[in-house]
Amino acid sequence: MASLLELRKLAVAYGGVKAVKGVDLVVEEGELVCLVGANGAGKTSLLKALCGLVPASGGAVHFRGASLTHQPSHEIVRRGIALVPEGRGVFSRMTVKENLEMGAYVRRDRAQIRRDLEAVFARFPRLQERADQKAGTLSGGEQQMLAMGRALMSRPQLLLLDEPSMGLAPLMVHKIFEIIREISQQGVTILLVEQNANLALQVSHRGYVMENGLITLADEASALAANPEVRRAYLGE
Picture 1 (cartoon, rainbow, N blue to C red):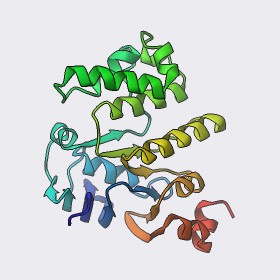
Picture 2 (cartoon, one colour):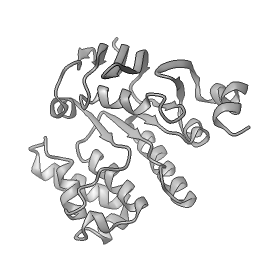
Picture 3 (cartoon, rainbow, N blue to C red):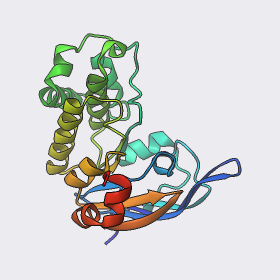
């Protein structure tokens, strides 16, 4: 049976610069898998290629056994993949509610969209309090919740999270990671890209370490957290 997501020799280049150099990566249904590494390792480029936001220069992306390589982004969303981008990417001049509705733009089941909007507000009560507020006026943590809620509105089978803790206060970081764990426990498969390797490995089932465009380690999250090289390079020891 095919894995939910499979990257085979995926490569990404910008001009002559190779950002991703032939990566193999697998995510099974129901897993929470993290991809950790330093700034510039190629993690965001990998996610963007997976979503069709940048073209792959080589290799292939398969989702439920079907090729996504060279598919346009909107078709990838329709297939069941949603990205919460680095920097959150909310529509700052639109309200919170309008941002969430944008997450469901590929859907036509209006009654279910309304129910899903209510479910997002139940998960993120602060967003409900600010439903008619412009997204650009929210705090960083609130914008992160909004970006996650917007992605969930597409009913993803695979949720891609790119640096969800970036720029947030420590209390909010822990809150966001609690929410990530809850979403995973409710059956949404997650691929998490995160510089905070300690927290990422705590919530994940498995992990990959990326350096200079290559996967250098792959193991159970607990094994990576105990690995002396990982502890020295990414856990501050």
